[in-house]
Length: 587
Image 1: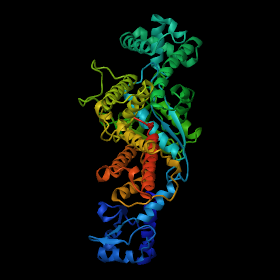
Image 2: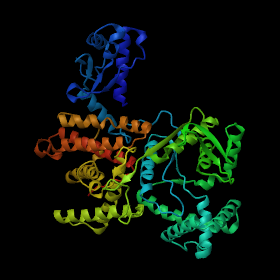
Image 3: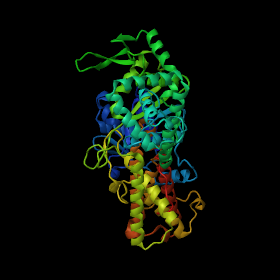
Image 4: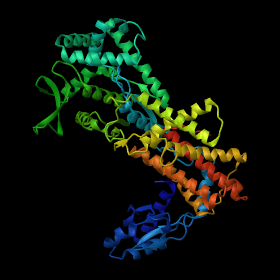
């Protein structure tokens, strides 16, 4: 709820008490944005809900509330419509004052959180010895956007990369490399990531088919867990090789992360099992140590356990996730822990969250949140794959987006007969290509699958990053054309006279409400929708009356419209930055 809506809500609450007595204190006035702009900006619907309790017609109740309602500093006189809606229209002078007030504010009127918290966002989380692929795209982009928004709101955010850097796969890979490429276990950079992935696949095939090799691989895991010098050194080299490749992707996407992989929690796993045993939750089942869960059953309808220690004494993902959860609460002192993974892992999170709660490890003031997301689909509606049926490498996907952006820009420059340097073309292509991929993902409701289409995401029209980058660059073009320094326009300059100016002004003042909603609900697509609508409203304002230009207006309208341009550009820049998207001064 934005500041204006909050003020109006308080005023209607006070009027309700003044009209009907103290018993009505705390009654929700049901104040919402108006369903149709012709009725005003907000409407209070509380009269309809009180009809039965008060034994009066809703219009009579609304009339009594309006008699006690003083919103004269904010709104025109309230109007009662239909069966008892109280319609409120913001005063032009109020809107002007609000815009003039935020003009000098670098946060554009968005207040920081009243009670900042320690928050952890767990996202990206690739596996060592494997390349990042399209499946890592959503976690990485969504997690980064959520972290940026929480940081902007003043929270103390720890961005964690829970990489898969421990377990059976390393015994398998090290055992195989000892046979076919021992230099990779002793020499840094002996393999590139592509070769490492190829060896991993061959090791997996061997592991699945050869029982003797399985035992050799298990022994390597034992040696790794015991800290054997040669095996531990080999493991570190393999991790470092993958880490360098991950970093290339993170730099392309401008992602900041603190790596804390599964290996970090390895010393804590036995303590997890011991404490679950002490709490009476642990049950031995077919040699494995388990916790039985409420609400989860197998195909036969029997209670489903969460295994925390396998029959061979080994641990699994659940054990590691329980250990990491305890560490994040006890050592990191997190008050909200957010996990950004695909929707297919929903049951896993529900299960180990339940175990942690049963064990009493979750204080009342700590919130656990799983942020699920859908699949990335190809234009055929199936999982996004290469033509050969392989998973798409994330590096290839990003490079292709930049390459297509480069080709589009070259074509446009030729059509416009513009001459630009190769450095300019490369930079614009990089920003547009990467931004298009990010925005195409973030603009979808994260819980849904979406179709990946280069053509749609790179379109200069529609709900795309290039469209909004173009609007921003268009405003900067106004500054260049008129030799305007937006920072020197001065305060108290906004005068709203045309309906497109009013529509733009009202939308500019909704930024705080949008960011607050994303902070709570963790749905970045709401910010995308806001920025897209803002861009459309700016173009309607700019293009009205058959293209009358801002720079051609007479004073004081000229300065007022320039301020609206500046506020729009700053809002776009801020909003896009919270999505991890860089703007361009020229396109």
